Image (cartoon, rainbow, N blue to C red; front, side, top):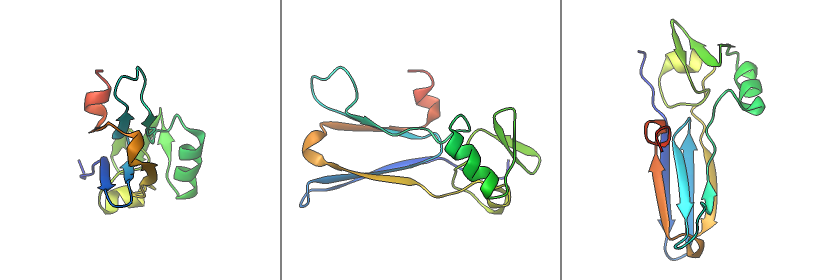
Length: 120
């Protein structure tokens, strides 16, 4: 394919006691607390199931069919991904979502792509 990737990243600032998370595409960051049954915080996947993501793709001049973004002769699952000119020309954005959390609320942070989350 034309190349491209999804991403999730975390950066802890120990002095400020903050945890910054960013993600792009269907890579996800999940923050958990010790002993809690559910995640304390989880990012959401940038997919065409979200009306805002579909609208943003169309505003960037992109098109979708069958729940996938049409990029040249390729069809990809996400309207946001890192990549080159083929992705940009198709309206795929590389802009991540960024959130900052209080580090004291996080015991662990798991970063993974859809290849992991789809089987959990």
